[in-house]
Image 1 (cartoon, rainbow, N blue to C red):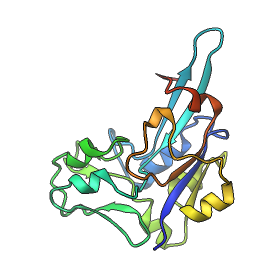
Image 2: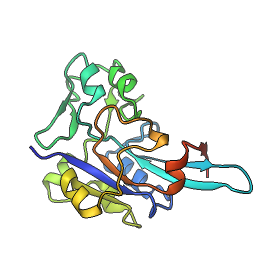
Image 3: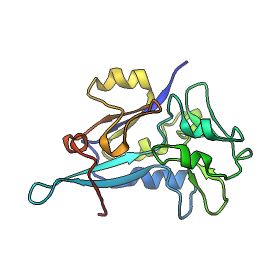
Amino acid sequence: MTQIGFYYDQTRCAGCKTCQVACKDKNRLGVGPVLRKVASRQVGTYPAVKLYHLSASCNHCESPACMAKCPTGALSKTDEGAVVRDAEACIGCSSCVNACPYGHPQIDETTGLSVKCDACSEWRAAGYLPACVEACPYRALDFGDVEELRAKYGAEAVSSIPALGEDTTGSHTLIKARAAALEDEGTPVTL
């Protein structure tokens, strides 16, 4: 079985949020849920302040905590390893939201149901990459088989940085991290 995942080159990311906007647009999300979030974080204090950006979505984990806690079986893994949601089976109980250590599934206030990244399954079936990857003007995102991504981008890619916490679920997101992101979790800042 293959395992899909994302690659994120934090050293290229300018925090422009184009990936976030493309994801909201493709998924026709209203105010509220954001399936790919871009956050900025500050490390250090004046005069030695460093800033980095973090673009994150579902990690399509090896052992998804969200899927394990779903009481209706609305979450499942596809043959390629994408964690997907069955809207018909979802009851909006928030079990997946509370279980995910990365905060990715969210409740859509309009429908009362959970929503999450499915790695743009329909788009990929038509031959495209996920909307966030296609939209990134700095080519900071890539997507594909995790082993192929590791081979392509080398051993410098990590699956965990302090701002994300310890990887307890087998994240399939590889990150080429900025030095500041490896130093400290940092403090969220609004730009």
